[in-house]
Length: 426
Image (cartoon, rainbow, N blue to C red; front, side, top):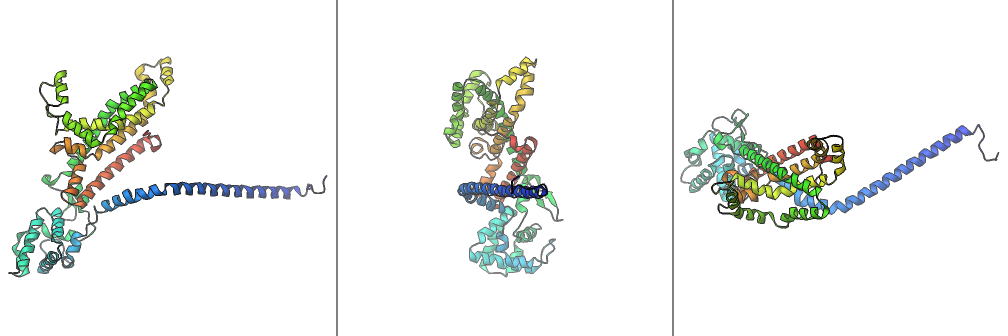
């Protein structure tokens, strides 16, 4: 026995020392691994930081600022400070006292002097149709100053109408639900509850429904056309499959505006599509395909076909043909083998392609604007009109917010049913 070898009495202590040393070594190794992992993550984050910063500055922050205008509109509150103070004790029923009329006259004069009269008139007109002309007319009468301000205000019937002052009072609050409710064809009533707007003013729910129906029709059409084509590409030899893939991707080499303009030529009453239908005997007379729902769906289906086809094809090419042969050898009929062996494996690609096409169709603008008729305009056309024509950014933000909520809800349903890890886009 060596002089340094532990005796039997020393072995328990040696075992404890050995265990403690191993535990300390394990902790140090784990700490080193965590530091190495943290370093890798920091280096990855540093590499992606420029892209993340660009996305935040060019996409994230502008989107948030735009959507915030759906609930934040300080135009009326900033333009009518004295009126806001005069309406503090008003209960919202009937007409306010003369002090509110005088405060409103003073605010109108102030806005006329500061050059903000048009902004105030436009903002009031968005909440109360017809208010713009009444505001500008009252300002001109106040500026003439040939009568007392209270008499001028009382002489204009618009300011004594039952619905005028509740709208002004609601506008004195910078944070408002007016635009979001309007985007859903709702409004606050005099009892403080929410009610539907009159049928002649209800337009947005119908437009949302139309947008979703067109998107669903285009998605179904691309699936019917894309699934067999994807199966063909996945089944043929690689050389021929490459040629077919190039043919599918060929439209991507031109802009969507050019493709839509091409369809405006093809769908004319004396265009190639009508000539083909007459030659095939499908139609007895030339059809009005331009500015119609059918023409719109045809053009959008052509544009969206690759977005549905490619995810399906990416899944189909991973399925081994031997699986179907094995199913046949075990006695399964072709349809049974397709339904129980092939289709479940393709399903994630089908769902991903349909989801991608459906969401893209919700935001279509150019094609409905050029090919669709007046009754075929989608929600994106209304958003563009509010931004470019009406200059009503608050209403455009509200419609965008509702569309975003619907889209995220749809994506959440897909993710809940299928699972995000099974969505295969490419």
